Image (cartoon, rainbow, N blue to C red; front, side, top):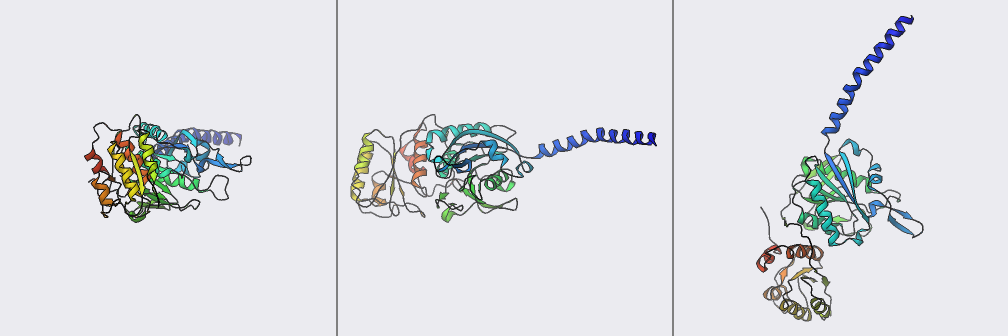
Length: 363
């Protein structure tokens, strides 16, 4: 009986040692077959917790903390984290986005990386996504994601949003979208997305252009393709380009003031289809006389700006004095595009005019 027991023990040990390499090999094979996704963290509500001293939520979570809060993430991708910064996105600047674009471009240049997820605060996420969409030179997917509820809330939305963003990067249905903003299962293009709600989880939409897709049950459902792409090299420095919103009774003095400060470009958020009053019209004339390129956008959520009205301050009269119309871009995105464009060598008036045409479609 003792001999039989010894033989059984030896047999079990033999099977264990034989099976170990086979199991390890199978595990390695599964891991190697998963897409590698790099998550670059920048802060925002998704990385915040309640702070009793301040009475509000503050940046608190690291990249590692964020990943550990997402169940099942290791089953859909091999994750690497890069902690870029940890700030509220109201503190973001074009300089920070420039540096972020450089960092992401370097990561995308790695042959082992399928794509990048950028965690970012929602306050200025649409601008950050648009900046990277305009300056990145890779075809690999980049997904901006965040949260409307902090990690201290009863039901935080960050973990599900991060999971879906990683899933999107690895999906064959998400090709050629460039940079997207993906929140609450909806996928938006960086160009058309806007934030519509201050506190609700369904805060981002793309207006009449529609969503690019939707994520459900671990699947990416594709709705639309990207129609407009403007690509520029990443500038080392960015020129000073302020944004001024006009209003009823505006006398134009703020425009004249910033022009006298030596700005390199100016974006005006006008009304309607791209109109301003007479005083603002003359202030814009002053800016153009000082060789300052001026772009006019609209404060209206839907539609674009067009040369429709011929009275002094109307879109047609603005075009006649050399103003560029922002087309379907919001004023905030038009500002970033003008900054990036003005930093390019050999930029001309004709190139700027073509860039801001509302019907500039690339095949």
